[in-house]
Structures are given as structure tokens and as C-alpha cells.
Length: 371
Image 1 (cartoon, rainbow, N blue to C red):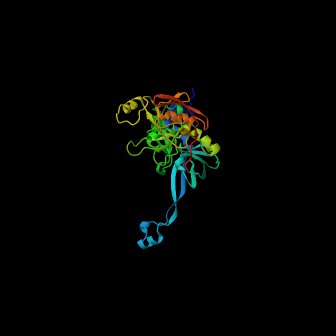
Image 2 (image 1 turned 135 degrees about the vertical axis):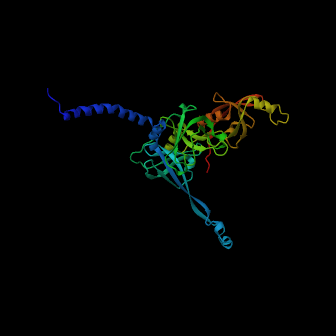
Image 3 (image 1 turned 90 degrees about the vertical axis):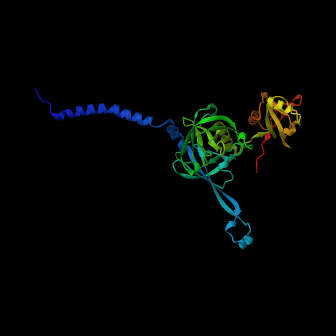
């Protein structure tokens, strides 16, 4: 009977130990993977496309601070104008490998210089390709760089209240900041927030959006951009953030990239909502100066001079109840329909004036741009 040497057992023992360790190592790998949330994965996907935007504009002001001048010198210098540099900061998201960055119009409004800091720390000069103050969107072009990673754009029409919402940007200059919340509401009209010069239905979220987040992306759980962060409500109701739906932002960006501007059709009327109950309350008041049609619709409060509305014969007190064969229950519905119409093409309106129904034809014109 032969005796096996001790050394000959080592390879067999090593194999046994390796087999015993495999499940433990696999388990640790699974635990490590599970330790990272879906938020971390979404951020990993989109963060290479998130940029910081630094701006500079020259503004005219007093050459000297009057408080620092001797009274006799103040009489001598007066309020002589001087040029000062004003700096601003915001965020943006790279949407195309050719170097197109989407941001807010108010971030790059009337700026003289734009510097874009990429996710990997590279800083490049940018030029404003175009801006649309009506939707508060702008497009900045940067030189084509190696390894540009544009974001994946989602579908904002597929959103539902309660979906996850992740905001990225550089609030207060703190780069690569991430906040988490949900979609709190959809189709929130910006006019209800006090912005009468804008045409936007916003995504409302409780994800924290702070100064410097403007222009950064709001993304879903899959790391797809669903909106562009634009504003936060301060004061009463603080903590509510709002983003421009990405489907609208995509259409505006396409126009800014191709022609440098966006044309918005307009009628030239100021509208207020009217409901049957509101009209009945008004008509039952003996002191009422105007009898209103007891129907839902968009009530004409004012007709602007030299506007398409004036040319079509609209009057103050008219109630628009249908347009292009679509029922109009409020001004937002009518404005959305006008926004989808074409400049110069006839748009049929059904209007209630007193006890009569009238059919009017109006041709929207291009919304005048501010100087």
C-alpha cells in the first residue's frame, strides 16, 4: 500500500476552496450592483451630456459708485456712464453630436460671451444659434469636440403624474448636482404663474430646481430627457419646479437650428375664460354693464389695433366657442390651436355675440418680436 505525499493534495484543496469562494464572490457582486439605485443609473446615462453655461454681458452704469464720491466730486462727475461686466450662469444639455446645446433663452439673453464647460471639465466658447423668448428656449453651438455624448431625448407626451423626475444642472454654481422627485402635474399653463408673454404648458415637479438649474435637463427613470428646467416658484408655494416638455423643445430646437428663429402665429386678442355659471352670475347682477352669453368659451376682453382679430371683425365681449371645428371651452385651448396653425392661412371661428352666432374667418399673423 502506497502513501500519497502531502504535496500532492494541494492542487485538490485549492480547487475545493475556489469552488467554495465562487458563490460568495458572486453574491458580493450582486449586492454591490443592488447598492446603486435606478437614479444612479439614469444619471450615469445622461450626465455626459449636461453642461454648465457661463455668460458675460456688458451693461452701462455709473462710472463711479456715487456713495464713494466726495459731494464736490459728485457735482463734477455727475452720473457719467461707464461699462460694467455682468456675469451669469446656467445649465444646458447637449442634444446633438454636432455640438448643439439646448438651454433657456433667459440664460443667454443679450449676452456678449458664452463659455460652455463640458462634463469632463473641458471649457469651450459657444455662440448663440438662436433664441425664442416666447417658449424660453435657446440653442448654443459649440465647436465639434472628440467624444461628445448627446443625451437621449424621451417622449414628454407619454408622461403620467407620479412618474419619477430627476433634475440635473449647476444650481448656485455647484456643478453636477442631482435632485429627485416626481412629476407633480402636467400641462400647467405658464400664464397662471404670472407670465403673460409666454406660450407654454409646463411639467410641474417637486424635484428641487434652483438658480443655475435653468436650462438643465429633467430626465425620467431611464435617463431620457423629458424636459428642460426653466423656473422655480419662490415665496408662497415655494418648492414647485417647472420644466418645458421635451417634445416642444425638440420642435423649437429644429427651427432654431435651421433658420435661427421661431415664428408664432397670433390673433391679437386678450382673452379670459368664461363659464356658464360665471355668465349667469354676471347677468343676474343689476349693475352689470354687459350681458354675457351663458356658455363656456374664451371671452374677448380686448382687441389689439391693427391686428388680425381687428381685421376679422372681432369685438370686445365676443365669446369664441369653436375654432377650426373644435370646441373651445377656455382661452388655453384656443391659443394652443392658434399655435399649431399657419401664418396667413384662414382659421374659422364660431363666435357668440349677444343672442347671435357668427362665423368669422381670421388669418393669423406672425407674432411681433420685441426689439
